[in-house]
Amino acid sequence: MFYTREPDNALRFGDVLKGYPSTTPRIEEPILIGNYPEYTIDVALPKFTVVMDPSCEIREQAICLTPLVEVSIRFFDNPYFAEDLTRINREMDPKQSLSPFAWSQLSPEEQQTRLNEGRKYALLNLFIYEKHDHFPPYQLKRKGQEEISTNYYMIDLRNTYKICCKEIISPEKSPLKSKVLQLSSETRAELTNKLLKYYERIHLEDEALED
Image 1: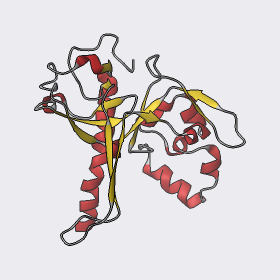
Image 2 (image 1 turned 180 degrees about the vertical axis):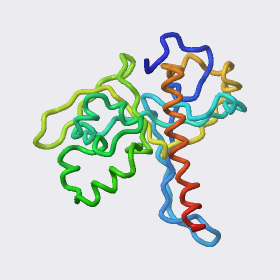
Image 3 (image 1 turned 30 degrees about the vertical axis):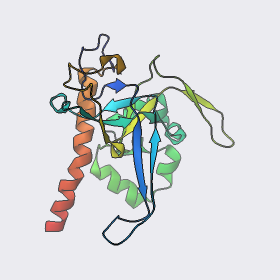
Image 4 (image 1 turned 45 degrees about the vertical axis):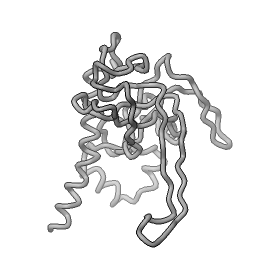
């Protein structure tokens, strides 16, 4: 079960919310003393956002969110993904991470290298949210291909941002009318594991520098 049937009366990590804007600053170069580069701030109101804070950090009129966005049509090129896009959330065999055509384009040496690595995550920065009646369907189309209708959505772990809201006091004392869906404990664990693996790369990069 991807979502709970009866959500808690509190905000939880991974919850789907509505009613919160997102912002993305865009700069030409770092803003330093003595230079005045142009910059813009993109403001949008996503249909849905996802809570990225653990419950204990939802306090002091602030919360970290990430937009819930449409998936890529490229995912459907891979039959393993097309059957169930939430497979992207879990570790998989190397051949499952690519379409049969893409796998065939790898050299035998590269194929063997990947097979030797064993099961791992593909698309490490992405987490797919299961289809639900609350999610409006949308159309995906690529030139020369049949149109696909879906209501899978996803988050990109690179797109987390902080927003301040006077009504957010604690997980229980928050605008719960904005809560749409709550992940099951199993799904929340999957999101936690993928998030940990995403940030684990920093540790691996440090180890590489020390070698």
